[in-house]
Image 1 (cartoon, rainbow over the protein chains, first blue to last red):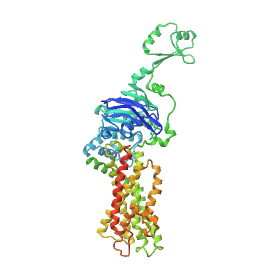
Image 2: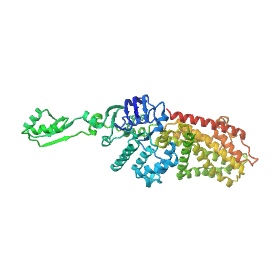
Image 3: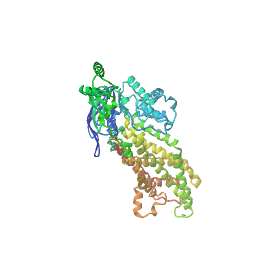
Image 4: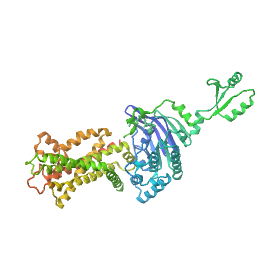
Length: 316
Length: 257
Ligand SMILES: Nc1ncnc2c1ncn2[C@@H]1O[C@H](COP(=O)(O)OP(=O)(O)OP(=O)(O)O)[C@@H](O)[C@H]1O
Ligand SMILES: [Mg+2]
């Protein structure tokens, strides 16, 4: 069995269907990304997988147990970093971690050793006795990530772990997550809005309006769903005619575009053609961002602006 | 066993640490009852004389103690709602800790915090002419703890019924304030009309405050309480047990849906 298996999962809040019949698997040790616009249903899915929310229908297995039937077994084996911060501001860095360790039944000595080790790795060792309210946003996020890993979970859920972080901290957090994954073999389920982060995940799923619209290895998805485009700009009528006859289509004002599989081959063939007066030549390799936008559209979905209160917590 | 006790310990330790770190809350919680005692007590001391068997400022000390416990325990338990929206409670609900033990943790921490505050208020007693024997101090501590436990449990019960912090004002106005005024804290139960007396008899705080009166005025033969000490004990303990069970069940249900 896989680390996560989801079958026909539905979740509705009154009349709104937040998760609309999704099915997918995540293998053990995999780094799996869950991408989608605001309000797509990512957090709702995580809350169901983490046993904080009961699904309306469908099944979900995490670490071998079903979420509705054996929530306690799952809770022992997972870690979760929430989208919003859930640290205790009035407690110190160390106390936040120690209390967490105790709740998972770690012995004090084991807990302290592990806490100090993790604090050093993320560069927070000198903030050990600091009240959390005196930490910066990036420090808090790092603290939450190590808290999620403190008890050595088999599956770690991260809900937008890097949102709002500066590029250095973002890289730092990822370095740490990937490192821990290598060392402890943790399966990682992560949501993010940063496509550059997601392009080197093992697999991703793109979810929109509660439905999965694409799933697989990011590079494969890109190759399958969008082709490399080559664009020529020319002011010469003859060239233009030849280009059209070559199978290119006109995009706008003097621009001709063709979608191709192999830019290298194409180049060779082009060079063999004579008499062309090419002014500019550009190859645009599509990125995950292009794929994402082509699948989910360009319309803004930020419900945070429309329903500030509603977005805060998901109760249960 | 460890699985049940550990969370209670963690939650209690956390709440106590937070409580003693929040100076303003600590000061407010001590200042309010002392202000009541001074302003209401000394003010009405001159007007109300005779029938009580004690001076008015002495009469309201058990009531002020009850008020301190009431506010402190409710506040401590209702913080569940806050924590559920902004942090700790969400965090703890993903851990393997049982829901029941979380509910107990909140009740125990509420009990300890309220007891501490109640005892701080009792420092005022000698200054208004109320003295205790060692045995009385001991039994007062026990009764303060029972009342604190009962109110904390009621708080956890309420917190498990409400969805968001917006309901807090409603709770204060329609549950907490009436509980305080209909408890015999400010005047003897016997002077009230029948209908209101029924409400008082349904209010656990009534028996708590009455038991405090029995202990505090034990040496004063002139004072007669409305309810017997035996009834106070039996009813107070019954209310406490019922509240604890309701709180545990409601909390468990809310967090397992
Ligand atoms: N407790 C709730 N009650 C009612 N509706 C809710 C609740 N929680 C979420 N929703 C709705 O369910 C939908 C999915 O929300 P969800 O939080 O899962 O989105 P998301 O993909 O995590 O978005 P974001 O990227 O903004 O975090 C949204 O339309 C949201 O308004
Ligand atoms: Mg979300």
